Amino acid sequence: MKKIVAVTSCPTGIAHTYMAAEALQKAAKEQGVAIKVETRGSIGVENELTPADIEEAVAVIIAADAKVDEEKFQGKPIVRSSTGEAIKNAKTLIDKTLSLEGKASSRQITDFIREVEQRKSERRSQATGFYKHLMTGVSYMIPFVVAGGIIIALSFIFGIEAFKQEGTLAANLMRIGGGSAFALMVPILAGYIAFSIADRPGLAPGIIGGMLATQMGAGFLGGIVAGFLAGYVAKFLRDNIKLPAGLEGLKPVLIIPLISTLIVGLLLIYVIGTPVKVIMDGLEHWLTSMSRGNAVILGFILGAMMAFDMGGPVNKAAYTFAVGLLGSNIYEPQAAVMAAGMTPPLGLALATLLFPKKFTSEEREAGKAAAVLGISFITEGAIPFAASDPFRVIPSIVAGSAVAGALSMAFNATLRAPHGGIFVLAIPNAVGHLGLYSLSIAIGTLVTALMVSLLKPNKEIK
Image (cartoon, rainbow, N blue to C red; front, side):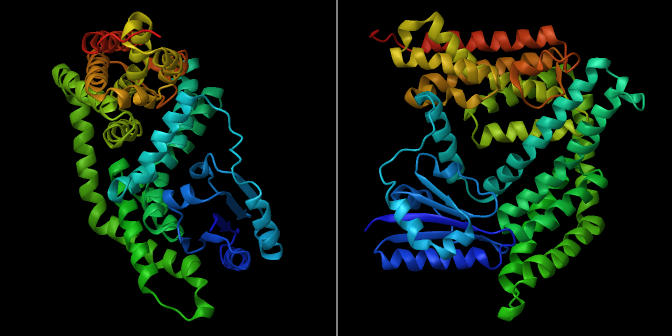
């Protein structure tokens, strides 16, 4: 029996979402087609599609009036419609979907980039528990941090303190980047941690809890605590509050947000917020007062973490730590992690040029793509090389990144933009000690390439 999968979602998430799902299921049954429908309603995602479901399906139907992330369907033919069309013409949609069987997605990307994206997707699908929820929050937070950080960096073009003069372009850029984008960093982090745990019902208490954590000075640690607290409180209320069918619509829009926000807010104010603030203040004090030797050790550790799993949990822990400190005006760790994150793909790309006999022709060609990913601060560009020879490649990239991170901290380099690779280095005053910072990246890259040359045997050139 042929199988298709579908997603239904309407703006309110109450009626049409479920009516469209029912219509598709009924039409598929009449035509002898197996179907699994994921609904994204006001209560959250139900009957969620797994990677195995998607793999088994010949095609996908997305019947939605709201935005649906299609990334997990990459490579599958997709039929798109509104929920209204799915309700009225479900049979036609099923027929159209079946006619696409065997047709590939229209996306054209290189095999190397496709492999990188596939590895990243596999990691996301395998993530569970605490890590999954934290990374969901971080992934939604990053665009705010990146946009805000680069806009703040742009304000420094006019001078490092030019933003202090009211009404100037520098002041307005700082208002956009620092006063708005960065102000939303912790609330968004907390909100989407809670969203990952409890779906939509967790969003309001999570964002509000994150805002309270910011106002109390608890920083990103307070945001993480608020997000998990909000998520589990909202999930408990969602699972345990039972209402008559006619009143179920009130649960996600009134009852859960109201009660969970009160619980989270009062706990933060009276119980949790102050101890977390003390911890955050202690961390900031330690980072700002540590000796040069301790700074080098911290840079070495952060650098090694960035390369160890190339975008996995350890890498993301180091990056999240550095990004969280930007809101506290501590910029040295961010410089170290970006230098260390650029080094693995850059070092491997350099190795393919300097030591071509160590690589197959396909790997030498892939080195060009790795170089582009490296200068863009996409550490995952090293994954295909590491996957084919982990016991030689991983020690090489860890060594190079550890050196880059340690040198960045030793040079007291700072970075005010949380992403962008070499493209933000050209912004005046965005990087402290730019020349030495660039040197740390270059040395780390060279160390990686030399380590690869020492550890990898020659290969027959084809």
